[in-house]
Length: 158
Image 1 (spheres, rainbow, N blue to C red):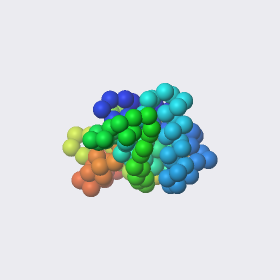
Image 2 (image 1 turned 45 degrees about the vertical axis):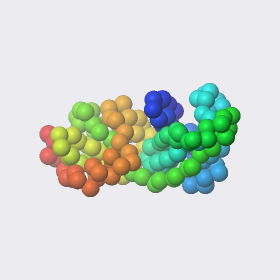
Image 3 (image 1 turned 90 degrees about the horizontal axis):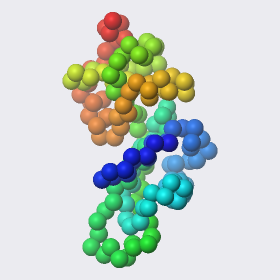
């Protein structure tokens, strides 16, 4: 699990953490967020817009954005969320393409001056290697790259 806090809170959970949880069920997704909030003392209270991005290879990424409401006292001690669940296919921005073993399990994409991997079906070990050498791209940014990028063959990168 990885947690980043800033203007928004982003929680990265690989599929090992969520094996037995059906996150397509909003109630179970909400319970997971409550559990993370309590366990890691994130101090979530108020009203949040929450997007859960689900990728079959990686796991999930939860984006939590606090909504500023006029009636803040109403949510003073409680946590309320509007949860949107999005099935997604993450991209992985590779800095050094030679750190990744060439395989037919990836679609290689070139967008602007960057190379992105889109995983077809990979093992946990392969995912670990990718995560050590790449940045996860998801959501609107990933969709933009998928729509505007060119698919390239691994042989092109020598």
